[in-house]
Image (cartoon, rainbow, N blue to C red; front, side, top):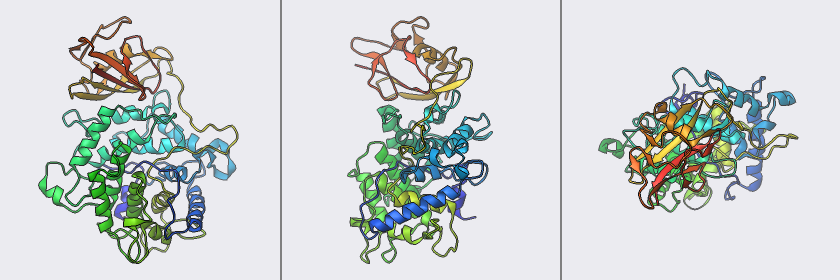
Length: 470
């Protein structure tokens, strides 16, 4: 099995993951004409639709095509409009939501990239990742992999990719109103780690390099460089930032003048090119002009279009292949249409179908999780997934903080809260008391911080941030 195909198994291993933020417009034409881009999109979407199983699914055991949701959305096709033989009861979005809601999903031994992958694709499919069902909150699932001893990492730090895709998922999957739902302190912590893992040549690789001179001096990977630069940009880092500029220079140095392909560690292939172009797209860097138009008039988008079979629409993985690959087709199409690895879902054409679906309230007696960060204002950030079983359709901030003292993953997110009952203002959290103008405040889903009190209403899927400050 090829390396790239192995990376795209339905359950990503600790050595691989996938994702980035999507732009929603086609790149400006350079050597690929508007007509060529339009044909690539039309035929590519048709091919991805052909990957849908008879039961309406894209995701399942073994090799999985669920990344098609990110490419379809970037190309302007809503998942709810993708049906097997026109059977709307089996539309791709509904079937995927049912899968993610199942207690047996993803597996008995999940890893953080399972939840990151699902967050990116649920978002693109029009499913609020934090409100998949009464019991499934993908944002909280990701929070559960925070590394307390290594602030900013998600999942084992040796598998650096888990942290990159945490940034992509948590920043890319905004609320249905378009608000970044995670607090700035968390975004900054992840950015610090991404920067620390940038290799000397300007790129990145899947494994941790921070603090290891040998790894920092090692050759970078085209694929991961695209993902990591996208992680920085969706986290708010501008494309003029030194680290993004260095990543751009690394990719430029790997261009093959005759074809526009990137010379990846494992050879020229569609998937590596797709990841790199998606990284450029996410950073607002046109992959068809300037530094990415070779002396022979070729660009990375030219290379991708050259790998597409038409009118069939599928992309081949290697230039020498004679048949299309599902994974190469997903990566190739998403990049050609200007996307990263998630996108705001398009407005459906199916009559009566909403753009977004999600759980609207807690189900009393059904166990669930909520995402919580606590920032003491002195540089100490704790992050956790809080398990609780609500007794009504809403809960309170006090109930969440109480639950976090004993049912948080990782533990230690909340060690104590005062008052410990009632409905009053929170005066002390984790041993730090309100003092003068410095008080505990809270925010939900990225809203402005306001005074924290136990009776504040918390709804299903809320991403909660508590912060001490003026």
